[in-house]
Length: 95
Length: 490
Image 1 (cartoon, chains in turn blue, cyan):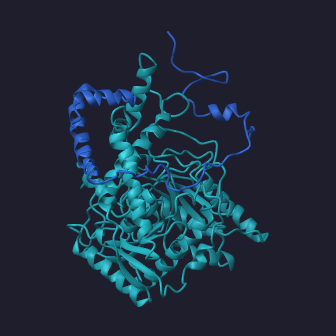
Image 2 (cartoon, each protein chain N blue to C red):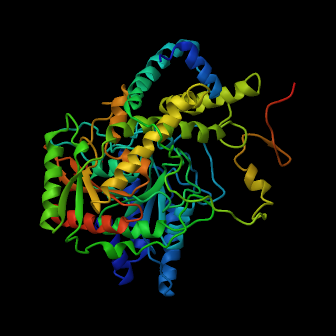
């Protein structure tokens, strides 16, 4: 399975990373190198093997459904690129 | 007062306890050597005023008889740990001038026990790298040089700043993190001790996420005992991390110096990889001989899926990273690069903020998780991960711990592997299996190569059995009697 420039364009779009057109070929080559090396996983017999989704086999802990903090608007906003009157300012979403 | 900086953490804590010197004196000595070590590029943010202030507070606590386990000891903090009021960047431009309004649990634990912060340490961007060269602040330079050469060497990665700072006596110990070998490989490259504990020992809360099912914090230290002291303080249950284990933290330092007689040590035959330098092979044999002399029984074991660990890792880790790093969208914190519309703003922000290796991994992660490839790549890798964990389970039915080399070479030159991502990834060939299985692993300096560069041996333990690693690590440390230090050139 070869990754071409069109695939890189699509994946970069999904990942929300602007990649200039003139870099797509080089990136495709790089990613192909890595994915070709990864293809060797196909040699492993994994029939009937349960996928390992967690490093430790523990049930997810539950906690009381209560508010534990809050009222920290200034802290929440302190690293925002742009704020006005206690709100985040973001680009227009709905035209 | 350069002699104060050459102390081990343990010796410094003893000196503080018997009032040979104050934390202010000890801290000032370290602040001075940090300020003079700019050519190493280990610290990317120095906090001398905060350090002195913390040291004075520590001296006051000690005078009141309230000193904690690390009281007054100056440490370096990998810049992946969020520190309240102190810029935390993960060495990425996308976090820019991010100043957390909260403290990571691991660092909070250290401050609870009285430790002093000297500043923030350099790392590969988002901990993605094995040479520190992906850092937005430029690479750390290894304090070690090969004999007769002035060539700049990598301290390893991603915790290169932590390892270099400890090796150069800039701090008594440092925090680090390990997703695929990022504590152990830099420890091996710098003649320091590094341990990645069992997954879940240390809280991940407040640590900038890379691959959440693999990330673990741990210390880099000057000695095995120092590592035990630090890990004890860093560990513990934290309700804010749902994968944090709700178990008691053992008294790790009490395991150092314990007899290892009768322990069974597995030697995984699959770790004898093609092209392994004879020096590494020799070191491994030496390590086996040391443990035999200490009364251990040596058993050959097989971990048949070892060669598939790295390719599996390079699906699992990028997949998790692509998801974790989706949060950097330029809206709530960090860099924002405006575009013509919202999507363009996202795309421009992430294009400008992430470095090449981080983008590469996000693209791979996005690819293997995308429709049509999810089962073929991602689920397949999770199944292989299970096979790798099962290999360890089987081996640990026969042995108490495993002994392997930490890395396939000594420290290499900066720029040497920069053009070939896969060659760079192969640095983690001996360390990455441990992350996939969630096990503890430790690197101990055990010898030098022909050029006098340090080499490390790795011990791998059963889940939650760090204690045995500290005993075995202590035995190797004692037998190796590794006293070499880098000659100061910076």
